Length: 258
Image 1 (cartoon, helix red, strand yellow):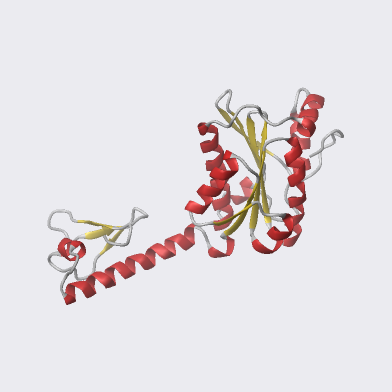
Image 2 (cartoon, rainbow, N blue to C red; image 1 turned 30 degrees about the horizontal axis):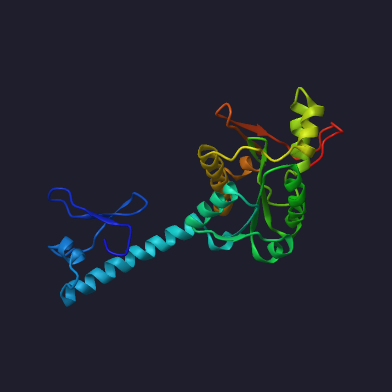
């Protein structure tokens, strides 16, 4: 069907239906006898042209409503901070699905221009530089942290307001659960940037996780409470993805930091 993602489906002698982009089917009201010809003809007659224009307009209106449901306009402005293939692909995926993405945005700019800021960090030093973005929660800007530790990639719980889990609480939760807390704490504070590039499978898995979380936030989905208390970790060397609950209160281990 021209200028839409819909297709006409005719089954035997039944009235034709429209298959919409969503996979749903819709009845066509009073279709002309040669519906396919009307839709495919570059210059149909006046009556047929008016019918086609009306049908296309109605389908386009549905598709605009679908776009709004997928990414509500009030939460469409997103900042992505960080450089490299991971941040590039996350920004591309968000934009492809309807977000308006700003790159390289500062904390001051984010305060007035975006509803969510996503930071992508390649090492401990860059993660510390991005910590200033946590202050945006007090101004109503949501926050999502993505970071590499060596070749592993972690995605922190989504933070929507100041009651949510902080980076320091995630760090303490991980150290408290570790069999070598001092070594893990040292790596979190001073771990170098990975010397291996991010492989395509890692990029795909991390991007899918970030997109899933961001859509749940944008749509205020029922999965959002769980995503606000779940740390996600990918270990490419093992092909392993794990999820870990994190509660928003401090744990007693004293050596944790950002």
